Image (cartoon, rainbow, N blue to C red; front, top):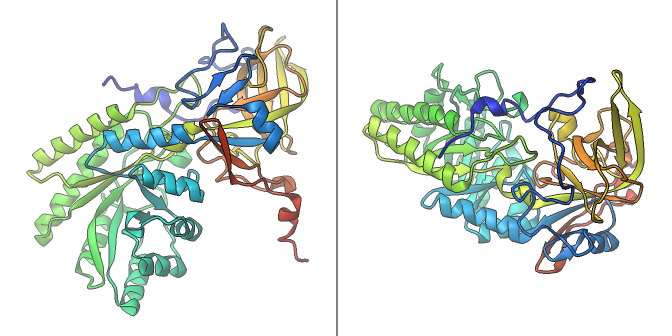
Length: 472
């Protein structure tokens, strides 16, 4: 595989403030056909119907909006299942864990398990929902840098397959719980490999100065591993490493694999015990815009297998049982968001340029990532065929914040007007799961589509829902 140049994807973020002389980013090119759909960007069943409106899962978006209202998250069930199955097939013999934090509801938990994946959770709520959905506890991995006693008690009592420990205080809590319940917990030790992933600072997780894991470099990781190994209440399975999210190339994994495999060998030399498992994390990138070039599951699997096998030979070790966590790569591209345009405003810029602000009926309350990371997205007009010329637009929300931007830069038709529908691609990961009630907004519903049928996964919040927590 020819990997992407890692420096091409230094951040998920674009420029927060537009260059006045050239308001669009260099990677954004004027499209020749605004009706075209990038197949890497949209879920696999998205097409344009006879009248030009988008159709997903065999259902026209016009019908979806008529039934469920706007704004709306639309999940392509067939696409999500296909992506889960693709990772399971590419990484045959490895354990693949779906990231609950990206998006979780009961149906999605069942779907990914049906496709042969495990589920990683990192909160009490995610763990409880997974168990309520009927997920076999043995197929759940429990993450978190500050798990509460309540979380750990549920994890241990339900028989979760592995708990990824993140501090010595957590190890002590876990031992006390296991002793009280008379059980043994399977654990992985979260280690910090010291790898600088080429991604946004807030989603890079393997450099030394951050909250996750035990450092390999200063010996903390070995101390934690030995502590777990000698505990009568814990079964140390191996180690867990995670270098970040929205990662396009496997260069960083090569360094992480070298350091974690070396650590496994050092542990064996020190204790005489061979640990059977290694989780390399994942956080594989997806295509949000034309500047992104994600690798396929097959390419990722080929590269990671080569890396692990090379390190095993170098250390004269057996290849451990391997795990990965693809993160957003499964659900991210499977969801689009639909918004209705409310106002259109043309703003003159210094230097003679113009920008068209397209305001829609959602915003940072249903997708905080552009405000949080200055993340870029792509969008199209979804309710009709486009015949007018493209103009550079900025899709913004209705919240009382100048940073309430959904799509920083996108070409939309010059005749875009109130009532038009804008579809934003790749909204499956960290959109609904990070949604808020800012400005007392009610969160949109999540609807799945498949073979011409729809199903409500999460209903639309009402203002009564929002107000019900106010007991003053």
